[in-house]
Amino acid sequence: MRSQSMRSLMILMVAWLAGCAAAELPKPYVASEPVDGKELKFYLEPSTGLDAETVRSACAVWAPEGVTCTAVAAVNEAHVLVRVNDAPCREIGDDMLGLATSTFGVIRVEAGCMRETVGLDAGTYLRVLAHEFGHQLGIKHVPGSGEAALMSPILSEVWYMTDLDHRAYMDHGPSVLDYAPGPPTGTTTSE
Image (cartoon, rainbow, N blue to C red):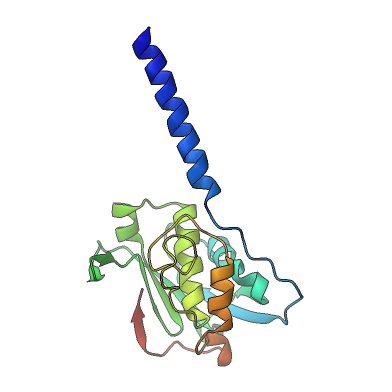
């Protein structure tokens, strides 16, 4: 009987700790004023396991900054090409695995690596793609954020824009929205 009580106590403690951990996620950023709209057009290469609605939802995470997201029928109409690769994991430095990479105008999702490490589901796609769309908008990683920002250098449970992400957006560099849609070109940045 005592072991049953201990087991119940352990289950309650784990549930309480899980609740505390979930409570520590940052709050989503909410714009205090309406923001001028910017349309980001993306083209999803035909692939298995990823659909245009998931990509649009990931891009729409940046809506508080006035970004709207539209799927287009041809790559030459897009600001961003989204491509899925099914290769295994590869290190990109500092013992980090590349779940996706961004070059200016291209997001390459490493589905094989995601499947091997964190699982391949709509939630993982959403978090990884939302992060990569942030890079396409000119946002760098938020240093020292741990797991408290979408633009953290490590994959976190955050799937929405936080105040840290908003501040990073306000400081952003060149964005795909600074240019007319067209075939992707640019400098490589692995994330």
